[in-house]
Amino acid sequence: MALTYTLEAKDPTTAARAGRLRTLHGEVLTPAFMPVGTQAAVKTLTPDEVAGTGADILLANTYHLYLRPGAEVVRELGGLHRFMGWTGSILTDSGGFQVMSLSDLRKVTDEGVEFRSHLDGSRHFLKPETAIQIQDALGTDIAMSFDELVELPAAPEVVRNAVDRTLAWARRGLEERDRLRQAGTGRMALFGINQGGTDAAERRRCFDQLGRLPFDGFALGGLWVGEHRSLSLEMVERDCNDFPGDRPRYLMGVGHPVDVVEAVARGVDMFDCVLPTRNARRGTVFVSTGRLVVKNAAYATDPRPLDADCDCYTCRNFSRAYLRHLFASDELLGMRLASLHAVHQMVRLTRDARAAILAGRFAAFRAQFLERFRSGETLAPALEPDSAGRPVAAGITRKETSNDGE
Image 1 (tube, helix red, strand yellow):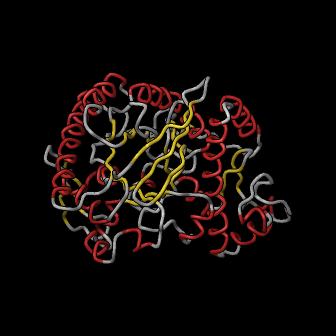
Image 2: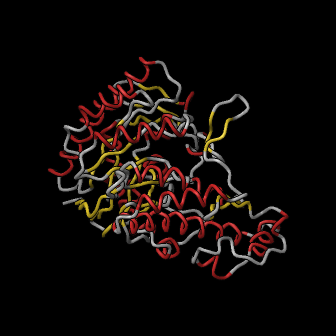
């Protein structure tokens, strides 16, 4: 089988759960954070360094690899695992988010999406069948169904039409995987993506049909794109209550520590986000007491590690003063060391949450984590209003998560 999921434990007072995924490339312990290697690389880090953080699965992106170097090139070179030197599991995004974020460069129809490449302006047409074919050529372990994401806020008819397309494309994607399997390929698992924005009725309508299809797992899509955290978490709770308990649940594009812990409490198993590593390359890291801007002059003579409670290579060997010096000097090592800490910190967070679930004490872990994280003077809220009063994720924008790559 392309994927098996075993539920190991459920927290007695929350919906948090611990499990094990097995793909064709090994075992993934859940809850799990997937470092983002959009273009077959986690920026500034080697595959061995990523594996050294404890990560057993990472994410790559169909859209970017389709445009460069091309899915057939990757296939001819032995598939994505050999191409990038990663021996663990890989999940690939279908490319739907990137295509939808092209705005003036794309046209959506029921058949698929016509778009212009952000690299050279060349024309392309991506269908749900094409998205599956590309992911098959890449040799991914877990493929994602092609879906339509809408920017929020959106008119009800826009959300309704996007749900209709997402459902139609989900069926076509499954049919294409079946065709590929009959032809001798198509070995990857396939996840369906629930859509509907923050319209609870539309999300329920979407999963009423999506859940009847033979997907190997389900993803929560269309969230954390500008709405307030409380509304996002409400949708997460609703979706997880609908999703079957015998298959994995993946919350797409979420990587702020508070959001991850709160989503785990509501039953989510898998996460990915560029936020931790992108902020790290800019001199900002998450620590156990919030957010630390290590490039600030205040840390020029600080002998402490980034986080005294962290056992990553960076925190075991270097001071805040040294990291601040590297960023002030534009030394690439600063980005590497900060990124290494960022990946380690997120992987450790989900592993600690898993251990707490297995021990039956996740509720206490959650309360202690939130109290400590929010107590730090370096804390920056995950969602802050912009100049127009709209909530936006701290340190990252929707545009940054789309087509500039991670």
